Length: 200
Length: 366
Image (cartoon, rainbow over all chains, first blue to last red; front, side, top):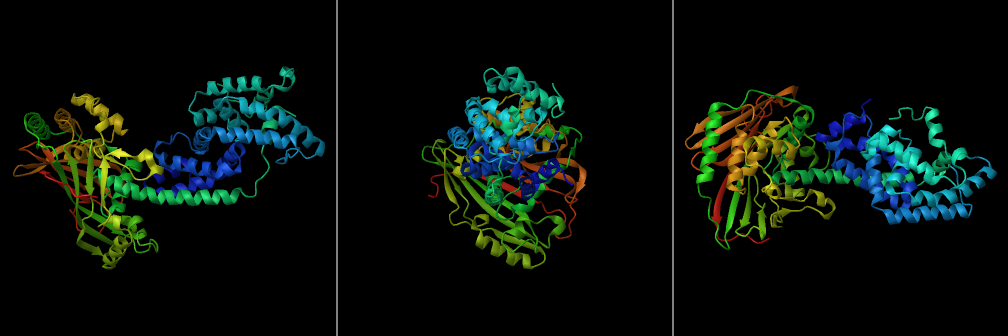
């Protein structure tokens, strides 16, 4: 099976094959943008992301086999151009959580758990919205897209050490008052679990 | 519940309408990819470039990028002493000579006479253009050899409108392989007139800036592509070579530098000192030699061995014709002497341009 890098090399002289890259990663990119901007804005943002990627396919760093971090990095930059839309969306997330209109992706099964989660998300959404765009990029690529810090660094074109320092800063910013040590060790736990071992 | 889990839960419910949105985005992407092929064609036209012209560009486009993308050229020997001597004399002539004088209200008319070979794949698809867009040597049943003309009118005040006249109908010189290629070509240019004789193919370029669509503003470019950099481009040949490498993003593929300089100098729009320095840069490139002399025209050839065999064979030969009485580049050619095809006779260049420059009183109106 061809790697994304192989396909992108071919796409330099046979542009049509770029559609294979779309087919592989459109779901992940759409999910990232939909969750960030809302469904209405996501469609245009997905199109823009892949159009930018298509035009810049010649600049892909072939040291990487997967195009996903690169595409998500472009998606993050596209999302940054829709700040107003994103801000509205975060307010909508908060409002729907406040109304109890919270639907889980499957991680929370029990009704009581969903209610707790809705309350927690209602509190969390404005804090995420208040992060800087760079911090939000880092957090959401980590939490939503599952990229390890090395791939986030590649996606955002920053040193991996910066990813770690941002994650540390985000952890402090998102921490509910009074809960620093007990509840805000999630990044550390993730690393302990092996999700992100390669600390720079 | 851990904080990260909460973040992950946000908006994580499956969205049943996502596949439809993705499908529409895919449709847009595919359309944009098709458009990009057209833009690429016209862009190459602008520079009189490798791929271009008339509707027969697809195969040449593929040629260019196959080599740029997947085949590593092998560095050959340095430019020959004979080539360096020709280039040095040409550079001197450019400095000491006199460019055509364009008086107020007059235009510098730059005419490109070109010949191109386009491949035709009979099985490529039902769209009239697909047989020419998708063809490669390995799957082509026919080939069309055409000749065309394109004129650029540069006003004496270059901040005015430049006129690009692309309305001339191409002449079919040869049809090789399946004779049905000719009918396919005629259907293609009927459906896509911009690929040949476009009745609307005359346009004004404000100050020489060519645009295609508001959606592709990033692709807007000056016809004389290096104009924005004339002041910063070094006049020392070695430094200028480094500048070209950096600007063209090519550290080792000097054939691209060779062709790019050839196209840029062909229009004669650069400042004279920069033209002279660029001619001297050609003398720094590996594999450049004097191919032949015909009267006052000396042809320099740059032969690049392709490190990996392809359907275009193992050699790319780029040629530039220099008028040794003026130092001007008046023609260019691109050939693949060992290409793997029996469709067309050996020795026919894949693409060739001759450039004539005159001063005229007026330009046609778009």
